[in-house]
Image 1 (cartoon, rainbow, N blue to C red):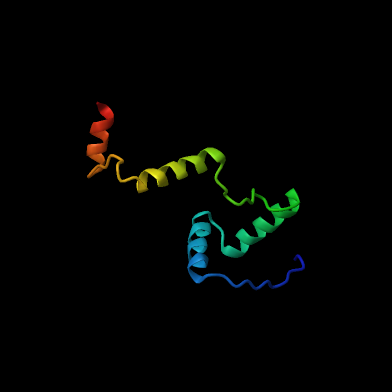
Image 2 (tube, helix red, strand yellow; image 1 turned 135 degrees about the vertical axis):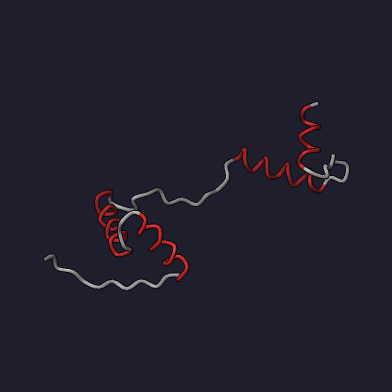
Amino acid sequence: MANTTNFSVRMDSEIKKQCEALYGELGMNLTTAINVFLRQSLRVGGFPFEVTINTPNAVTIAAMQEAERVARDPNAKRYSDVEEALRELKR
């Protein structure tokens, strides 16, 4: 048998519950899933997935600023519901 050790992790109880259900559907328990993660981390020399801060690109930032400008513009066309907006688009 391999030399094993205990590893204690504090986590949000709801996250733990959801992960146990997810990995249970994949046929493994949380301990096995964590071991898979750690072994894969060793294989790739870091996180086994990309870790980034989701910063919007320039096009997205411009679109967000335009949406804010339109929302503040009292002269901008307003619609009472989605169907009305869609009818206007089809004209």
